[in-house]
Image 1 (tube, rainbow, N blue to C red):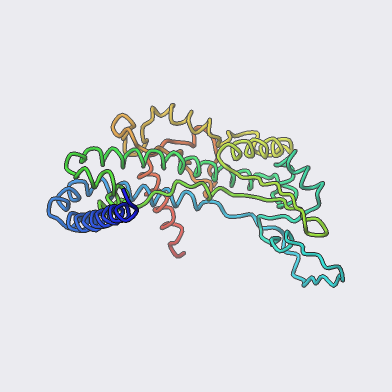
Image 2 (cartoon, rainbow, N blue to C red):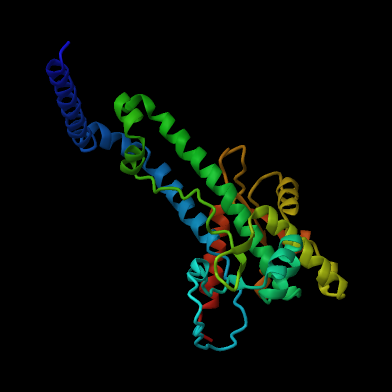
Length: 319
């Protein structure tokens, strides 16, 4: 087969593929506006609304954390007047932020060995009851958010499986993301970028080398950090010694105690297998409540969310 013939064959293949691509996009455009698709969409409208409400709730939980700011010592301009012609690439990357501590090499190395000790020392996180309570709340909300993402995806996928026979094969295979959006599902953010990250950064005087130590407060590290703070607070004879710690273990114990059932509306995981259950303070911490087993209850995410909204409304009533 001569080169000219091969070129013609390739051209035909490219043209055919291009036509198929255009034809599929036209087909997809028509399908998502068809009565049959709108009928399918309306049949799961309650499911999509419920999933989207849970998705919004999860995003609210992820925004619980408020970064701890370093002490403000003022501002100053620093200029390098050296005659040495350093390129200093690492110095260009160096920046100031509340979660970054620019330090010496020994500090950076020691932070790797004792991360929580150096986290508290250099980011001004004092071992007191207030900070312990704050990080317990963060752990509680983040744990619910991580569990919620898994349950939400499962609920969404099961809903889509339930209508699978009513969706064309090509749409299911080649346009799943578009299908989910057209059905009305909001996109689920599975990233863990919301976890607080603290960094110790060292840059050499010449700026040509650098070292960093990052402490990410994910669920596992938050669990350990809460216990670390609790030991320090307890040592100082605080009230922490008289109460429970809101750890991942306690969260599961409370759910088990309450038979995995919401104490307000009565719904349980046997009724809704993908139900997100959360741990709630009966008397809120903001109103003097404590983390004791008697003051903790299992609530479904809907009841917990509505309770939080009512508390906010009460707090905003003028006096």
